[in-house]
Image 1 (cartoon, one colour):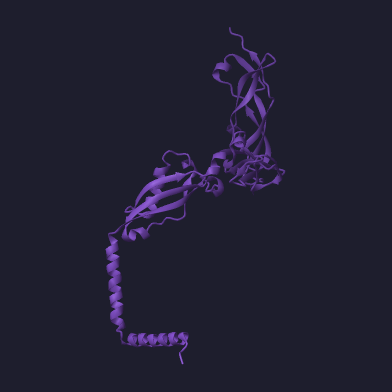
Image 2 (cartoon, one colour):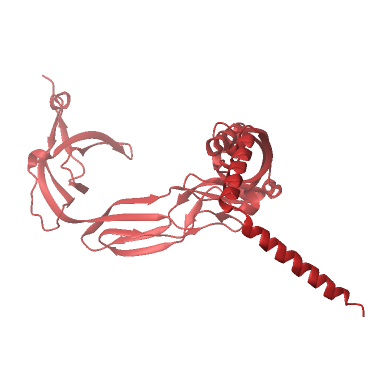
Length: 323
């Protein structure tokens, strides 16, 4: 009676596996391990001086000085190049799938040299970079990017007894992009209108930017810092100073004027008073409706003063008769 061929194959495989396991028990594993290590070292030494060349493809991204990255779908270019090196140096290069360049280099004639410098810095000096090829993004030809000034639109109302001393905002320019025919007519970007009232001391805001239709901004908000200081209303009397050239020719009256002013202080209840010597009032000639007038002007004033009003605002004079 003939045996099933599958059964014969199973018996043969069983006998073969039994022989292999029997042989493995006779092997000296420590000797085999040493032989494998020596072989690996020999292979590594042989390949240390072997020169390799591979081709790589990276994406070039661009970013503004503020660190805003441009959209990949529009402004990302493709970089192709070759790397030639020896042995283990091939594994050393720190070349990711993307490299980032400053926006100013996008149209620069020295862009290839800049890229080569970045690649060598990442890969090491023993790596040779060649066949640099930059393939521009097809969509970028339809778009333009511009640096636009920021215009604040607001209505600031300080609290009673306060005034706006200082207002700082950053950034003063932002980057925006859009189709070229739209960007040609865009020259600024405004903030969303805000009415801010009862401002005291310091206030920090984050106004939104209102980009025109079809314009895409890389910055959505700006930082606005407002400083409001308390002030007190004061007045004093000062003598009008006449230069020697005028003293010989005219006599003025009144010789003293009253000064109304506002003073901002570290604390609004500070009762410090200014002496008359800190004010210096002079005169200048002015004309109105063809009439020559002598008006008082502030030549020197105490610091922290503003909103100055002089009364009277016009001086009478008599011309001295020469003997």
